[in-house]
Image (cartoon, rainbow, N blue to C red; front, top):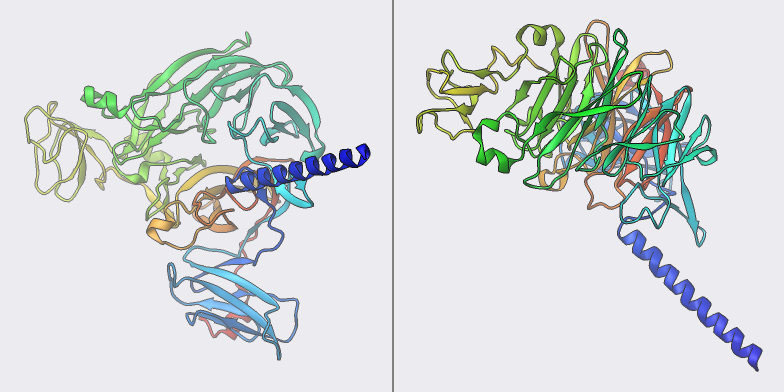
Length: 572
């Protein structure tokens, strides 16, 4: 009888334990802490306006059907759309039905887009760090301060001498093959941030929750700089090595969404002594500080978005946001001793990505409403004029041009208050007392539009090499703003951007990313590192890949539609 009672207790405890585990899993799924692996999903394609695309289906002898009369599909499965259409008219489904059957053998969902697609692509090879519960596969989350103690998280940090370094919680690993079979390097004395580390000739720097840590050998780490705000965005740290003087300059920026807080851009200097010396290179003051001191107009913003170093010159660039008068791009040509305001006054200068080629400086737009564009400016122009939106204190304003009031000594001299923007309707004399920032004066504003990629905000960028050694910049975008603006779809994307020797630019969509929850608009894959064999590692955020590390390869070709497709659809 006693044995029977014990067995009953064991069964009861087991039942309660399983029930609690089921409830825990449901809770973790509900709040996106773990994400079920999507084993099946309909292929999604983006259809470029005016460009035919060959669909495929393993089933032979099928009839193709489109649920949108604007998208035609030929008997052989070539899809074509003749004009641009946004949501909901630019979305739909294409299916292939076997002869005599009402059940489709192939189904595609599609979105009509104006940019190039289906020429090159990212092929996802592997989703790392999965776990299994009750036979179901789940993805681990990215580092979350409230959950990283419960479930292990993985973050890729970079490529050093052919080794891909990554962390799982507070353990650092390295590998040349598979992230699930890496070699342990060390136990970290801090929780690493979701950022690349940087490798200088004098040692390595890695961001933690609220600090920068330094190591000479990747094994022993010590706190080098304590920051007030955490490292949320990807490009918050960069460096430049001065070979002539054998000095490395480390730049670290702060980000938060706390109102009334200043944010700092730090500069660290390190030499053969291998002891970084830190100082504040620039203080981005809060709007609260600006209201108290209007002279801070070109130094105040909500937060810092990124800091990047120009690999051709060593110039350091940083960007801020979010409102028009807070959106700024600034540059230093003297290793952070002083900064010049390159552009401000519109969302065209609100950026999360700045990158460089020999002839141009490029940037994207972090805005959640149309239009989201990629812009660039020639180096030669900046070297001559230095500004796109200069502070003017002489001459006259121009009708039709937008200005920000920089200073005024008379009430109502300008039709806006200090720090506000206005569109001029007649000429006004400028002076030391009455100054403006010219936002879009064509005599100064010489930036070029590279591509209009309107659907959601643009995020980070990362340069990778193609199979033949050419450089392609990967640009991550989200659908942020879709539910409000109803632009195209609720998908994130990865674009490839390549500048030719002549200066022309190829911009093409490489991959679409679905959110794990349709309500979420920030699903994205951000490129972190590239292995020597060409494999690219991405960190997944809010996508149906979960918070995993994704690896893939870039197939870059830029092929034109084949002539047989053009002939079949009778295209010019």
